[in-house]
Length: 438
Image 1 (cartoon, helix red, strand yellow):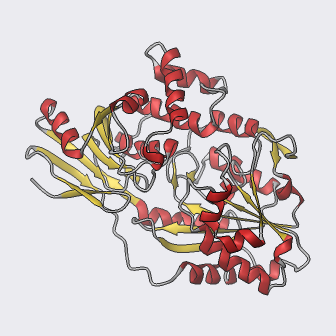
Image 2 (spheres, rainbow, N blue to C red):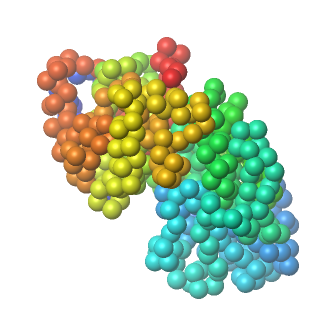
Image 3 (cartoon, one colour):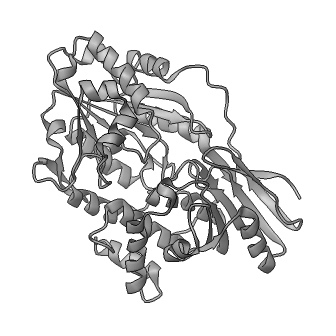
C-alpha cells in the first residue's frame, strides 16, 4: 500500500491502492512559491505588454472603453484585476463613466446582481455599468462571416466602443487548446447561431484538442472573430497546480495569449508512457455542472479502451449536479437507442445539437461525455451527488474513493493505474500509440 492523493476544493484527499495495482504515472503538479500579488502582476503586465505598446500609449482619455470579463465558471480573480486596471485607466485620464463591463457569458446563464456584487465588489459595481451578454438578443451587431460559424454578431457595447479589452484565464481547454485570449469575444459576446455552427463543425476536427494551439481550426476561427471585433488588449491570468495566479500576461490578444499558453503548458503538462486499466482523477478545479466533465478528457486519454475512470468531485456548486444538465442526458439516452456515440457523431455531422433548448455548453459537455463513455466506464465519487444523478449521466457511483477502488478491484485484482491529482488542469502528453480518433 502507498499513500496517494487527489486535489479537492479545500484540501487533499488521500487514498491507498490494492497491493497488486501498479502505478504507471502519478501526475502530481509541483507548485513554486508565488512572490507577487495579482495587482503587482497586472501593473507589470500592462506596463510591459506582449505584442503591443504600453496601455497608456494605446488608450485616450476620450475613448469609450468596453471590458469583457468571464463568468463564474472560470477562476479569474476578477475583482483584483479590475480594481488594478481601473486605477490605471483613471491615471491615464479615462473616467469611469466612459467604461462598460460586459460579462462574456457565451451561452451560459446570466449572473444575478448579488453574484456580480460578490465577484466584483460593491465599489466597482457602484462606479461601473455591468451588462450580461445575451447570445440570443436581437440587438447584436453584425461583424462579418466566418467559414464555419457563418454570420457573427457581437454585443453592441463591444461593437460601438472606441477601445475593447478582455479579462480572462488561460487554462487547458478541450477544444480551443487553452482558455482566455480571443475566447472572451467568441463565444463570450457573440450570437448563439454562430457558436452552435462553429462548435458542431469543429469540436472533433483534426488538430483540435487539449493544449493545442498550432494548426487548431477551432482556435483559428475564434481568433479570426476577435480580429473582426477589433479586440485591442487582453489581460489574462495563468495558474499553478493549486489554482493560484502564478503570472499575468497582457497585450495583443494572440501574442500575449500564446506566451501565457506556453506558461500554462509548462506548468500543467505531464508525459504518460502507457494507457492504464484504471485512471483515478480529480475534477479539481472544476465544481460546476458541465465543467465537471472536462477532466474526463485527460483521464480518458490515458486509460485503455474498456478501462475505468474513477472521477472524484470533492464539491459540486449548488450541492448537486444541476437538474437541467441531467435532463439533457435524459433526452440523449431516450433517443440514442443504446448507441450514444453514433447519436453524437450524427448530430455533429448535421451541424445540429441533441437538445436544442439546452445551452450550448450543456450540449458540448454532453457530446464529449457520451463519446468518452464509448471508450471507458466512469465511476463518480462525490458527497454532493448520488447514485441516481450518476446513473442519469451514464456513470456508476461510489460514496468514497475507497469504495470505488474496492469495487473495481473485485474484477481487477491486478491492474495498472494512472493518477491525475488535478484532473482539470492536467495536459497529458501521450505516445503516438495512445492517440485515438472518434
